[in-house]
Image (cartoon, rainbow, N blue to C red; front, side, top):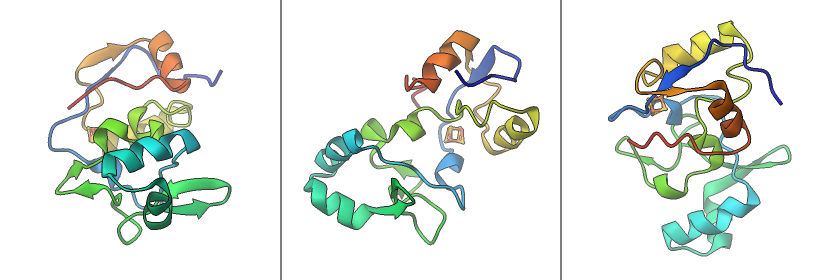
Length: 140
Ligand code: SF4
């Protein structure tokens, strides 16, 4: 299990009107095989079309394409158009193991995400469950 080196509980609630984490330049959103079909279905297109038009390879990973290397392709007017079926990577932000590994990294994430420090208290155990893929469950 990845270590949490940040004091818990951590308060978090995703904020209305914010989409900062969908606009991180240089990052990428991994789409797992099991996520392809639900996203394609949500978009009402065949899975092959989704793969061809909305994903790219990043090493061994299949990732969403983005607008000019920045905003996510599915961010429209600051709203995620695949929100109910978004990849687990999106559903678990900001509680990624690499974000909670060091204070320095967490401070960067806090500066980017106005939802941190607000809303529900997440215990160490809840964060560890999120590391295993449990969605954060902080709906806007
Ligand atoms: S998770 Fe944080 S950065 Fe992302 S949209 Fe919500 S408040 Fe903004």
